[in-house]
Length: 88
Figure 1 (cartoon, rainbow, N blue to C red):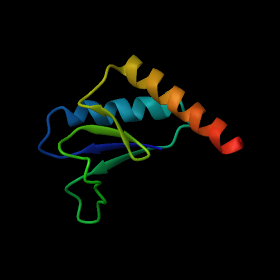
Figure 2: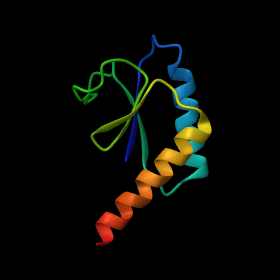
Figure 3: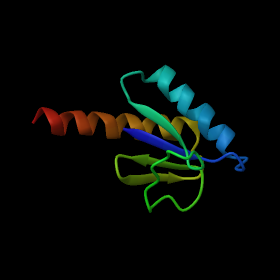
């Protein structure tokens, strides 16, 4: 699962949210969640030291915004690798 950590005061986070929405549209099979780190109920891993940060499961894959193509390519590979591991 891709989690994109954002905050209201972060100007680059608007782009991160747009990239997450675009990824969902292009790869609906890939679970994507945007997490507002300032929300009272947000669960924020210790590895999140700023925003935006993109994490796949518990790994930081991008600090800051990648290009749309870079995000698409990386997440597609991570998703299919995860699916292969699950199916054995």
